[in-house]
Structure formats: C-alpha cells, structure tokens
Image (cartoon, rainbow, N blue to C red; front, side, top):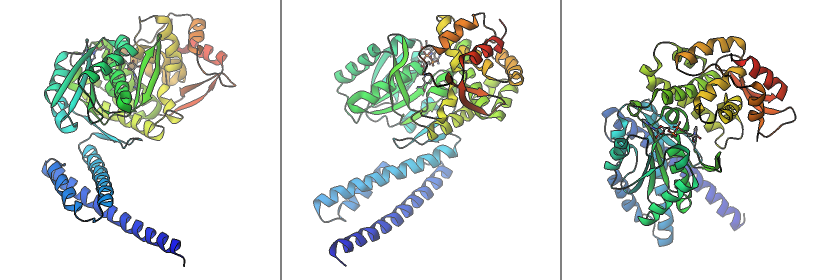
Length: 428
Ligand SMILES: NC(=O)c1ccc[n+]([C@@H]2O[C@H](COP(=O)([O-])OP(=O)(O)OC[C@H]3O[C@@H](n4cnc5c(N)ncnc54)[C@H](O)[C@@H]3O)[C@@H](O)[C@H]2O)c1
C-alpha cells in the first residue's frame, strides 16, 4: 500500500472518530440544554465556553494547528449553541427556522420586548432602526438593553424603505465606527425590517440583523424568510438581498395601538396562509375573536411560512404559494393609488382564485375582519394592471389557486380565464 493510500485511510479513521466525537458532544450539549430549560436556568454560559477554549489550547502542540483547532472548536460550540437554541426555542412554543446562514430563533410571547437582552446579543454597538410612526417607546425600550445603542428614525413606509433611507443608516454606522462585529436591529413594521435588513446585509458585506416586528403583517409574514429590500423609482422591492435575521422577537403587546386597518391587513396575510396551507387554522380564525388568540394564530401562520421558506429559501418554487391573492391584488393595488392597503388588496385578490364554495366561506370572514370583499374597478383595467410587468409563460402567467381550504397550488392561467375570474370574483 503506498503512502498516499495510508494517509487517506488515516484521514478516514480520524473523520470517523471526529463524527463520533461530534455526535457525543452534541448529545451532551442537548442534555445540558434540556436540564437547564427544565430548571429555568440560562442555557448559555459564556464563562464556561471561554474556559473550555483555554483548556483545549494546550492540547495541540503545534502553534498553527492549535489556532486551526481552536477555530474548529469554536465552530463546534456555535453549532452546539444553535442546537441548544433550537431545543429551547421549540420547547417554549417559539420556533426555529433553518436557513443558509445557520438558522434563527423566533420567539412569540407577550412582553417579550423586555427579554431582548436574553434573546439577542446586544453586548456591542447596535444600530436600532425604527420609523416615525412606530411608538418611540418600543425602540427606546430595546436601546436600553444594548451596551452601545445608536438610534435612527427613518421616514415612514416607502420613504424610509429607499436607497436614501439605507444610505442614512450606512452614514450613521460609519460615523459611529460600526465594524463587522456590530449589528443592526429593526423595531418597526415591514418597511423598517426590509430597510434595516438590507442595510445589515450590505454593511461590510453583512453584519448580524435582529428583527422586532411591530405590525401584524410584519409579525405574521415579513419577519421570517430572509427577504430584505428597497423600493426604487416607485417599484416595490426592486433592490434587495436574502439576508436572514439572527433572531426575531415577536411581542403581540406591541400591537396594542396599531390602527384597526393595519391589524386587519395583517390578518389578511394570516387568512391567506391558512387558505393555502392549513384548513384547521382557517376554522380557528373563524371561531371567536381572532385577536384574543393572536399568539396562537401568529405561531401557526409562522409555522406555515417556515415550512415554505425552509423548503425554498431563495423563492424559486414552493414559496410561491405565499403569493396567493397577489396576482389580482397587485392589479387592484396599482389602480387604487394608495386608497387600499396591500393586505386589503390581497384579501380582494384571493376571492377570484377560489372555488365558489370557498369564496362563499371567505366573504363573511373577511367582512368580519374589516377587509373589503367588493371592488368597483373595471375587470379589464385590473387585468391589464395585473399582467403588467409579469413574466409571461406559454399559457399566460403563473398564479396561485385554492379549490379547497388548506390546499393551495400554482398553475398557469390565461388572460381570458383571469378576466373571467375577476368578473365573477366579487360584487361591484
Ligand atoms: N421581507 C418580507 O418578506 C416582506 C413580506 C411582506 C411585506 N414586506 C414589506 O413590508 C412592508 C409593509 O409592512 P407593514 O405593513 O408592516 O407597513 P409599514 O412598516 O409601512 O408600517 C405601516 C405603518 O404602521 C406604523 N406602525 C408600525 N408599528 C406600529 C405600531 N406597533 N403601532 C402603531 N403604528 C405602527 C408605521 O410607522 C407605518 O406608518 C412593504 O414594504 C412590503 O414590501 C416584506
């Protein structure tokens, strides 16, 4: 056997030992995490991690190998942390979302904002980004928990979610000497989340991003999945990046003074997810006052979105189900000129894509939630606006349909069929 083959065999043996040692390490870490979670103790112990690194520094004699080994150990520790976090996150009813960048925890709990110091690593410079319409106490509450907070308040909505808004964030980061070790935290609706997430994705080619969504739409939908973006020349999300957050904190108490129309449009997104993916959730929304059980509804909606984004992080396939209601909805939104909110247009846009039986079920629910179910716009104009800028397929365009609750699917639709559906989708 030549020397090369012997060395390869040695590598195979070492890899097998490493794999067995890795599994033992992760299992021990999960036993510790379970015990600490049961006892209500903090799971992570940075002082012990530092001691472990120090102990191990002496175990490898060669200095360059020692450095490399310590990097490997740090990597194992960070995987243990992620594993422990998943156990912890899933145990207390919160979620863990896997992603290209290693996954992140989503905590859904009333009063969770006060626990941001435990859920996020705020022991560094933190760019706390909010906008003028978000109650200032929320960002101030988060800033109190940061070692070195730097606050920025953007203009509301599309004005802040722009290159101008992002440039402002980068200028402030430069002024305060932000490095790759620092982070960005959004405290606001989807506009703030998208702008702050994009700024974090680009700053020094990417720094940690935390998200505290404060509208129902952002809590139920925009907060997970890793999409960030800016509007440009009036076109939504024209510039953007996939940059998953490090952690998300969803505190339903922050919705207390959200205006009713904004609550309703967030609820439209939850209904959308139920219609395409979870018939039981639709029944749950229909039964009683949905706002009284908002934590449960949020968790279930987020689980639907999690399944879709984990399977299709880059939005190349199954994630398209989330576009239910959006084909016609975009057409209505373009023509309404700001008179209708996005979620209201999605509510209207869902109706033509359902069977008559499902539509008859959805109409009273949407009405009870304060969402529109009638539209006076001409079907011809809606069709033209809905098809504008859409990538055409051989048959027309791709759209999402629901023939029964919980079972959405994508297929091509011709312009004629879409027009017929718009004509019968709602009363004028
Ligand atoms: N990244 C994604 O996956 C994703 C998904 C869906 C939507 N989006 C984006 O999200 C944006 C819309 O988000 P939105 O609906 O949250 O709107 P928004 O962020 O523009 O907020 C709407 C208004 O509510 C105010 N507000 C926020 N929190 C409040 C609170 N707790 N109490 C009172 N007022 C509050 C804001 O100041 C703003 O005036 C769009 O730009 C859309 O493209 C992104």
